[in-house]
Length: 319
Picture 1 (cartoon, rainbow, N blue to C red):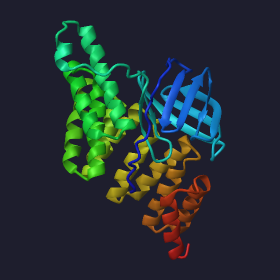
Picture 2: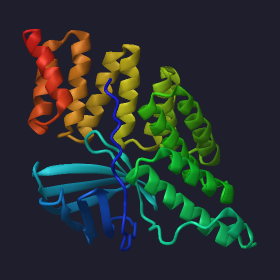
Picture 3: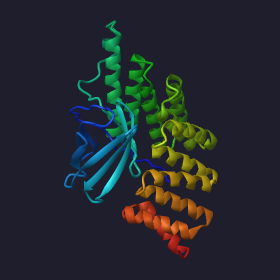
Picture 4: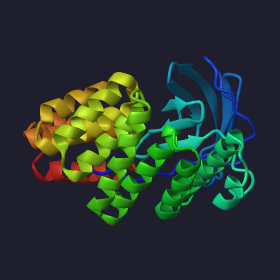
C-alpha cells in the first residue's frame, strides 16, 4: 500500500487553548500559510495564503469534527482526534501529525542549569520546554535528528512522561520512513514499549508501534497493536488505515476492505479511503468495484496523484 509520509501539522503562536467537553479556543498553524482560530463553537482561518475558511465544529469524546466552508474544496469536513489535553492529531487526507497546545516560549536551558535546582516542579516544567521544542523540530521543521535529541533531554528530566517517549519513537519512525532505514524502526519500537509500560491505555503508543511493526514487515504484531489502538480510540480513522495496510501487505484484502468500509462510515467523503479500497479491489480482481471507488476518490479530490495513477491502470485493463 502507499505509504503516507506527509507530516505537516504543527501548532505555532498559540494564544490560548482550553479543552473541555465541547469547546476549544486558540490559533493553530497547520501549514506554512494556513491558520485556524477557534472561538466558542465556530472557527475562522485560511486554507492557504489567499483562501479564507470558516465554519462550525463539534467535539464528541476524542473526536473533533470541523465543517468547513470556503477554500478550494468547499464544503469539506476534517476529522481530528484529541489525544490528550496537549495534543491533537490531524489525519485528514494523507497527512497526520500532532499539534501541541502548549507554546514554546524561551529556549530550553541546558541540563546542567536545570539540575542545579532541586525543585521537581521546575524539572517537569523544563522537560516540557524540551518536549515542545521536540514537537517544533518534528512537525514544523521535519528535523527528526533534532527532535530525537530534544525528546531525549525531556525524558532525562521527566522519565515518567509517556508523550515524550511517544513522539521520540514517532521521530525515529519518520526518520526510518524517509531514509528507508529499518534500524530506526527498532529504535522507535523500544521507545513505544516505554509508552505502553507507562500508560497501557495510550492509544497513540499502540498506533505508532503498530505502524513501526508494519514497516518492519511484522504484520501480525502490527495488527495486534492496531487492534488495541482501535479498542482504545475507535473513532480514529488512522488506526484503521494502518491496519488495512498491514492486512493488504499480508494479502488479506477482504479484511483491508472491511477497515476501509469503517473509515468511510466514520468519514463519508474521505477520498483516501475510497482510493485505497479501490486498490484493494484491484488486487482481488474486482475491477468494476475498483473503478467505482477510484472514480469516487477523484470526485472528492481530483488532484490525487495516486488515484489518477490507479485510474490509468484501470483504463489499461478496460475499466
